[in-house]
Image (cartoon, rainbow, N blue to C red; front, top):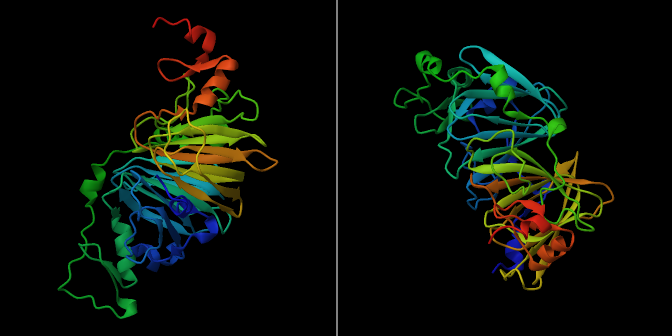
Length: 386
């Protein structure tokens, strides 16, 4: 059972976010600064112990955010779990390889790029000054961050060093750096040359363009009910779509899945629950997120409910960290369609538990769940062999 305070504490309004401009060693490199690093879910890979974190609870993945002015660059670095960039504002040049050549691809609003582990990557803001990307990192423990040799060299030239135990020593702030301290050893050119090379054609298969999303109006059992009408578009991994022909463009393991959900004006997703934790980021519109405090069975009437209103606009995007196995529903409270990004823990397919009255109402519209958990025509499903 969750308290009302517990439920409300998981709401992350965009205007509540706090950043640091000194999360990583590149803060001292002129072409990289200022860079605003945010940690929403989990501490991420920040090398600054003072990094503000909105919610430290483990989710199986981590959610962060990044913003920097036009022309600024995040330099070459590597992660050991999946890193996903979700562009919510502006235009960005994504970079990878540094092996030694650099490949690039541009992404815009609503586009998602997932970068494989064990390759160097970076990015540059080529759009508006307040461009913003959310980021997802796989697993609760990511293994940290490994900077490229050129990044460490550029920082050292500014008097800022990274020790082998990942402590930042800033001579400009009066900290002492001498021969008794051991600098972090970067990968050698030979080690970098041994890394997998991803061609632009291969990386293009890991960019999911918003304009090319595969929306389905049959992805949720309640979608055909009056006042519902939600559509789902998969992005990566096995999500909660109940459309049997739905497949995400990117299918390899990340530790979480990503989907978009689109609600028409006045539409809703009816009462349901998931066993997995889920993060909702409102991209556009006004969405009421209704969460129940009691973990009751599907036949029960809704219990005590906490209603939170999440808003998404070019000025900011509210987030909510949905607890596992709690009853919830989504309602579009605006007069235009609403768009929400869903990040759900786990690599396995997610199975929705619908309230009994939703199942009954869907059946009256000739919709039911088949033996594999997909939506189909009830009059065929009922004829299946027991």
